[in-house]
Image (cartoon, rainbow, N blue to C red):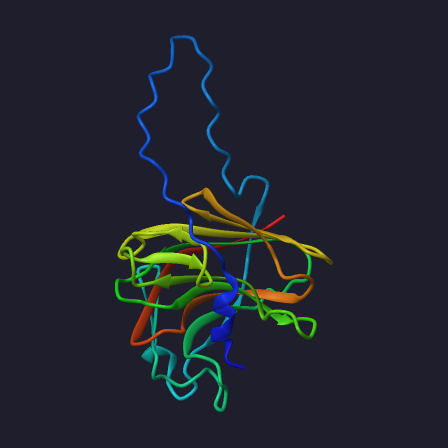
Length: 229
């Protein structure tokens, strides 16, 4: 099943705000606010494994490279899907093998999105086993070739602009339950989104480039980590 329709799940843009004046210097002896907590406080870094999904008729080296700690993945809109006969869009992705139903799981990596990539997912939580009639994903983060690189939840809520050609850290923390769980997204350790998941499922993380647009799409990753608690 072609999952382009899943990109319709987002809704609304973040409203632009007025410019803020610099705050006045604190008075001598005044109490200072505590620094924001690290999103990984209380979590345990955990090992993970993964397999590759790439155009079925190509070698991995045709769409992936690894050098100096950086995974570089790219794909073309004209590429084949990951399985012969599949109707899904072309991709080069890490398919994490740490499937889960419940519990607290966090995906964490530095991400680099080269300019020109348009309509591609670079990280998602895929619901591999889910009740009939429910969505195939809990969340997808997509990048679009507007605003110097606009990151959205699906094709809706804007989470970041100016994302092209710079490294930024992304964390996706999922509190999964037997009912409806909660997903939090952090950019550079600042919370940018809190949203419900799509209900019970067996799911897993994926990262790479899943091209729903046209032309060439690329994403790069370093310092990839997995956290549980």
